Image (cartoon, rainbow, N blue to C red; front, side):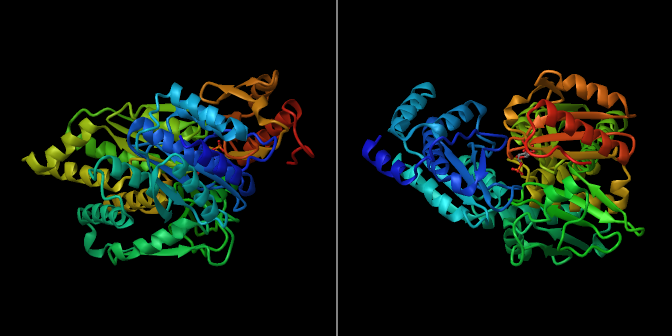
Length: 541
Ligand code: G16
């Protein structure tokens, strides 16, 4: 290690005194001006990780759904997954080390993780459209170079595009070409092949309005437009030319507030969707003729995809093990529908794509979605190989056609991480193939009324949870209070957890009516405020 270079560059990216940050649900997130030292040090860590696993590592500068003033950084492991949890602790140690201790901390990480500093390192970099992202990604480069690493800067890309590039690179092109063109070609080809199999392909014409949260998704969708067949008429709103990122728009806003985004003019029964700031989440919605807003969230996306895949799997008769992975935020009626009507096993894990992804890897076909619209489908290597083999060798027409559809789904789905663009194409293809309208999709089951709230406390880490975040262990008395409140309402459920991306405690409640869900969420938020050290004024109903 070039100690002199490390000293010189870390002095250029000083750590504000007394600032401690933690690797959260999806990396580090904070006000952008607090992050320069963190991204520099994550450049160092990415280089170390690359040396440790002898593969290209990804690093994305984004704070996704957070306000424009925030920023963040996520690391991407060799097959496009989130950074391995065993390295999250190293990330936190490195981010918080005193400047004069940096070299010591790096040496310790090298010892613990068996990193050979003489090895090469290769890092792919991407960033979102936040005003602070360009400068922060320059600091990432400084970190990589201090440890003698090579880098390729993709500039503005969606988070899932960067995950895709990393996977392509480390599979020597087996997963696809590690270029934006490669990504657009792979997805659009699979999509077109799929809709060719639609019986109503003659009159196939699809209008879709997309709210891009004023983020990078708008740029990348515009680039991709020429690759789509002319029948796909996508209309981009909130493209970042007029308003601020994520401000009153985007998937998180729509999901949390259960209302349409600003900047998108929605006619009755029109199919619309929203991406989030870095285009790794998507939710759909429409307004009925009476003017009521209908949200189709990640749970209903998982349900639609599961129905479609289950039918195809029955046709190929391979006895593949399929399951759905959700989190505590999943609507109770979605879980019931999947288990009781569709008869698909459902698993509940902690919030965070890394947890869902990991669980989904246990199955031949693992569908995972968070209610907030972050999700994808994983196919095991064995299942994929078998499906591709059926496409070329199967004599039975129906079986071969089903295998062909599955093969195109495998190519259309971004298996590295949730991807709004890929998920949107998957959904559009399924709706077309099944001849379903957005209303019919929505009518699969009725969501239990629910409410999401946030409460600010002095230190959100006073809340510790268990049972996939469904029960609070601390502070004392909080869970007992929640249990008592839940008993007051029918079909009710509530839980609280500290956010890993924002400085808030999140509250979720569902009940038989919207009034009851709202009342329960409010009462639980008051309990959090009083028992967990609320800041400012108590939450108002
Ligand atoms: C990130 C994670 C998601 C998580 C969300 C909210 O999404 O990737 O898995 O659901 O944060 O997490 P929390 O409730 O801990 O704040 P994104 O789209 O912001 O990267």
